[in-house]
Image 1 (cartoon, one colour):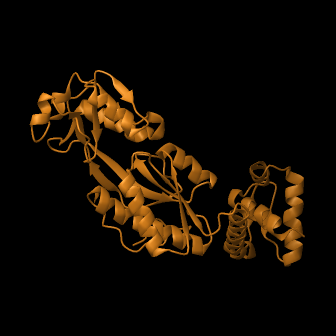
Image 2 (cartoon, rainbow, N blue to C red):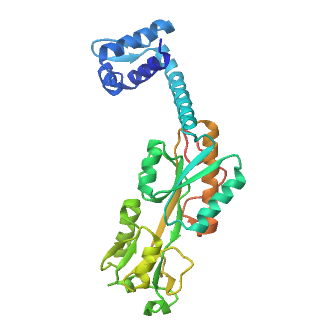
Length: 321
């Protein structure tokens, strides 16, 4: 008897308490589903459901066995996950997505800190926007990521939310470059360069809405996938760019915005499924990445969010202090 398959059928029927809906959810006909449940009952020697023409109810033994069945299925799923990672040659590897504009020094610091903490593992960093990371996490192609909010993080573990104020990159000869700070409304009439919307739609929309709310409606918006392209537009004097504090290139000047009205919101996210050892490795990365983002990128916990401490992601938990 296919015990795992029969247990899956039992759990779905127990959740639906309706054989028709359970069969539809399992993608099978109702008679074979009923037969599987009956075979499981005969094998276990107990009746799992009380059936009538009007309703289906779990029996007392059925209620006792439901949590055990769910635990067995979760363990089986983890076994398949480990086997798949081994088949792909990914055992001993933590696969992480990072945004394309995170910056070379921060990427290098992430690799060095993870190598120091976990020399037994390989960190596979993949340049991927927030939207792509969310899809890859759902598909199992990534283990963790560094994303910009807001984004759809349902079903994922979520680290502390970190804020990073944005300033403005201006041509060095611009009038505004002579001031120590820039009022956002003073950018009115200038074009704006931002990362492509497809990389982080929520952050893109929030940024433009905040600009308008604080008195800056860009004359035009240009999307720049690579920082060098954005820099070229600023150097040409055709646009300004909003970015965190950065080491500027000759010909451009970075200035903070008065009142810090704009900021990126960033955090680590991760898959909650996996074997315990791999989840501990993901926890190590999440802790390391949060510390690196704070130290190297100047990000700070947003109000109400405590600094990250030791974390161990689990299938049933978020970011654990």
